Image (tube, rainbow, N blue to C red; front, side):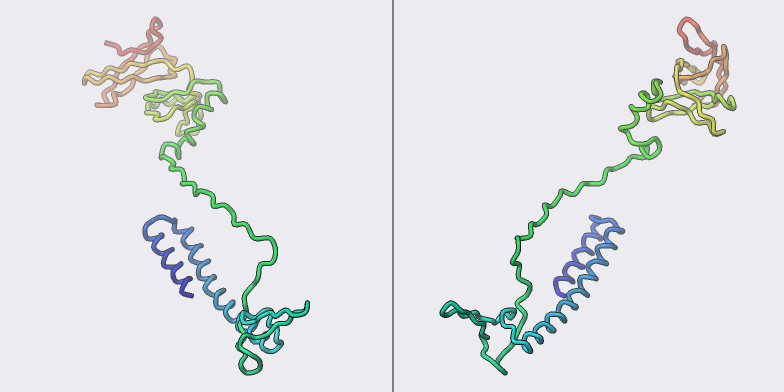
Length: 228
């Protein structure tokens, strides 16, 4: 029981230091408590075995049994004597077969830390696979996308490369063949977007001050520029 109390104290120490998660701690604590009750059951069983040894005289299973050999024969005697002097105690299980090989301890793998961006867009390893699956180039940064379902224009900043834009209406628009868009506001701010807009002209608000800025398509540079 002392060893079990030591185990529980050690588990509590690990839990308080944050080295094991609460769910893991709960399972380990339950197992430690079960081991405590098992220890009591084994102790009672050992006493019952000792009583059977005293009744049946099976000295070969007693820790005080001594084996004597003479003339090619052998017999078991009690180190304490016989009758009332006998104080049997079970010698415990004996391993007579192949020694049990302890399994090698595998190094504990630290849980991979998942960033907020990966929780939103999936594992980082899969980002490069989008291009292979869709055949389109992924884009990141400031994007100005028009939904092909509802036609709403929305600007946003993509922190990771994406190949499709999901509108609030539920429509999905491929992010492909985007043109540069240079928005220069009178407030002095300059923003560079990538857009799927195909109109000759459009108006969009400045990200800094919110003032509307007129833009036009320049076929020579294949980009949208601010109307002066």
